[in-house]
Image: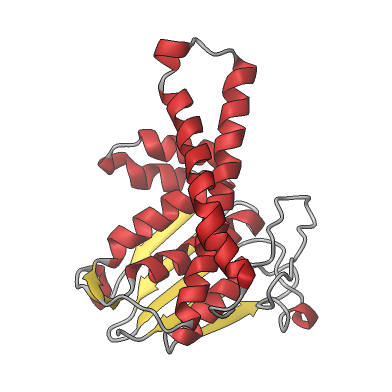
Length: 244
């Protein structure tokens, strides 16, 4: 992608606004049920389906924009807590991939947030320096990396997803699922743009863009990404990112 790419200009300038209006309108209808309703189940389901798909489209658009910005070398330099960005990324991913769990999280108080995750097989461990200390980099890009890795694991897991944050200088993120795994002959292609690994159990399929986004961002951030997997053995993606 370059500044001269007309498709990028179209996505940024001509789609962001209308998509935001659609999403705001649907959210407004859902939030005004007490004034406009009551809605029947079909109406509720239709509005929620429109909301989820608008959010998916907006997330994909934002990913394309962030990849474009990273290829232009545009990074913010902020100090932030990884735990804050991680929580935002978790909510983003869960609401799109598993809306029912997303609704549980939305209703959960701070003390019960972790309980909802554990009950649904989402296990989080934060250790090392960045469990308490600030990390210095672009928080939007860290959030995007986390969101994509979490979304991928949620799509392909059987029942469990494990995420670990570690590192004393570089930030180390590991996301593991207990899914079908990736055959060795396909592992060279998993980071290719628009490559899509179909789920044998007929689960959700993506556009094959998320992992290519992650690899692109990580490399632009002078980091590394690796995969440990095998057919029937689940998958574990590990990302290392040095501070900016």
